[in-house]
Image (cartoon, rainbow over all chains, first blue to last red; front, side):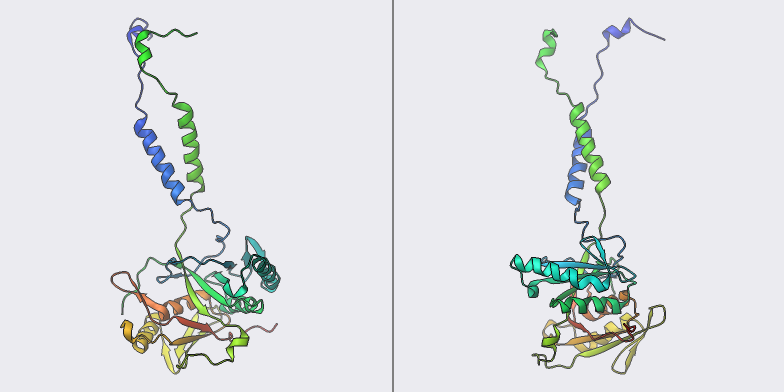
Length: 152
Length: 161
């Protein structure tokens, strides 16, 4: 049914947009703060073992190289799959670059992110290969576990 | 030219549509790229270069040697320090606690543990053992450190190259 007579007297109804815009900006701020672009250091193929003591470091490492190891022992450096045997050459080139930038190998920490089901021997082989390139500082990375260990 | 009534000239109406368009674009972008990442932490391990290994260090105590054996699937078959066997990580943690103590003054900071692991052992068991050795979280949520000097001995049962 069309009503034409009444329409002339009607004013255009306008919804109040302010609360919606407020909420939208809040959401954008939330996602902007939490967004993490450091995808290169994490690979979904690597499921880290968890530990209650794995707390984020208070002082982040200054010079580091992250090496990830998949379940089958294949390593990932800078997003590239590298077989364990070929890791020495990659590390050597990385060390040369760092040396040119004024960082000696002794100051560089190797972060080992290994899959929980990877063989420990292969992780140790990886460390040995890093030692061949004269790296000597290592950390083993684990995922923070939310299950609190009982105090003895 | 649009001629407005004098009544409408008092209020300035902003065009909200383009702004809301852009804002929703941004919102969608952030939602799509959002990824919940678990917090991660590090365990320091002591792996000096071979040239330094033969040199005497300032460590006066003999490192404890934790032997971890694996079955064919890589699960933990047994673990022991000297002749003492442990059935689980809680027992290992209790043993380390009895050796090192919890009072900050009595902590033996020179205590070192060497991990002697089977080649096939799943890495998650090593991290569990390192967790049991390194410390625990007390009731207040603080981390109580026990032994922080951890090193690996060459793996047992490595496949021939």
